[in-house]
Length: 196
Image 1 (cartoon, rainbow, N blue to C red):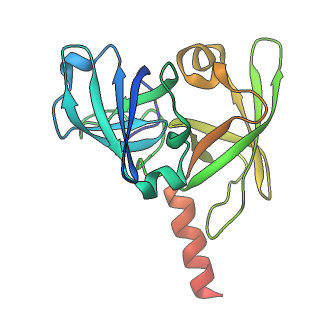
Image 2 (spheres, rainbow, N blue to C red):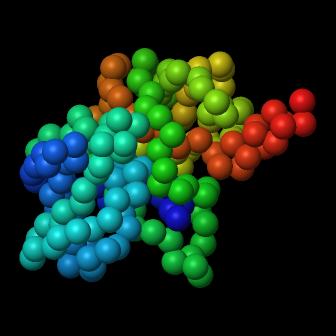
């Protein structure tokens, strides 16, 4: 489990295709602290460390993950938001993020707002994947508060710290991002369907 508070950005060093899978080799400041079998969130996707060197680590994304996320678009040099899994005694600064991306969305607008930024995202509304005003959503693994929630779209407001310390500073119109909708909201939506 993760909190959606990105620790740092990792840089993609290499991408290797292996049948329907892709192996991503990355570098980041906490490489020396990683262990084989450890879970790390990459743009919101929980992946397992399968190999380590002195200054890089490798994770594998299977076909299902590549179909539901933006990881298949990654190339060497790209920046990826990374977060190690939460410790049981840690403060939950963001919200409950499972690392199970629901689907992708497309950035349709980036507006600067006197020191902050508004990003608008559109997504295909399916099943229980909905946002609510002032609710939580994870965009590329970043825990954010929804503003201007509409059917199939929403906005988030980004402070300068988040802009500079996540890959949000690379987003432009047309950028594909990963979405993980709030797990509590998904359970409530499913229960409501059952009782209707």
